[in-house]
Length: 397
Image 1 (cartoon, one colour):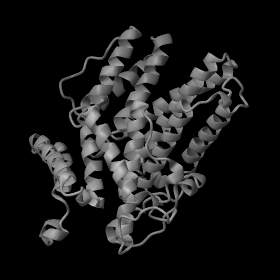
Image 2 (cartoon, one colour):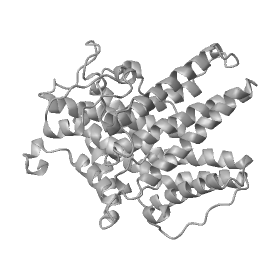
Image 3 (tube, helix red, strand yellow):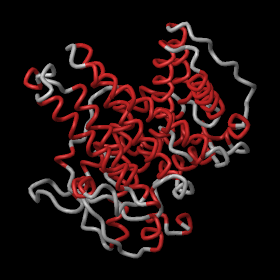
Image 4 (cartoon, helix red, strand yellow):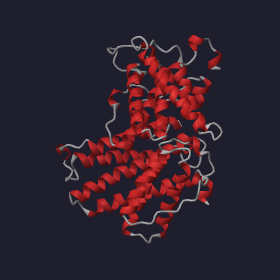
């Protein structure tokens, strides 16, 4: 439909190539074309940026192109390019004011006219939150600083997919309000964003420590913050409606990713707690309770993977690989002390085989498998023997 529009109203060539690159990569028939589309997308993005004073890139469509192309680069392990592309998407979103679609200061420079209708406003919301989601996932995977502060965001979470596709205005809510309501009124997309935000809070909690945090005191700022984040995660887990739970939410890839991220956030939070508790020789119950929370969360991630064996995994969120990696690390750490535990051996083998089966469509799995192989070797654990190019369903049987 877009290509039937007048030339001046068609989406930029770069955005079309970004869409084609991602689409062809998930197709066995057209996979060989994905690199060609990717390189042409980069070429046209750079040409647009160098034209005139660079004013032609100040569009929502160019921001969308950078978001999509950075996802492609992450999936194909072009990590330096992906990190830079992700940064471009975020900075362009901020330049366009997409972080304050629903309010905020009026003293900032305006680069876009007001949206002409609810659909255009919702498109701007979704573009910003995709950039936010991506930079949060990228930072969690690397430990590098995030470039969007929650305090600067005055854009509501996106509405449901049905509302957007039908053009039917629907109520939306800001991120803080969604956290207080435990995600009870969220769409799958908004839920995935909510968990990306929680992973970002985890990252700040772990890496932005100061002497005032007083980690050796269970009533200090660090442990107070730990309990606050843990309570939010528990409330989200308990308060989610059935449509955002497994198995009812299986048709929606965002719901699957959201549920995986909840357990991943729990693992990251409690592994940090174990590290601090051991460092400061705090009461043993903290370490043991956190270890149990990590193990339970890792088992839940493996359980979700078993539940999606029959689905098309090319539709899944590419950063799901990180969730699997985190769960596998928990199993490895557990087996270091109890290497004869058959249940955990089976779970680790399943997750590793699943990642191996998925790496054809998402090379990120290969990078995480290489890291896990190093950790298993350090623990003197036997590495699994992978069957040649198995389907995921075969792995689960």
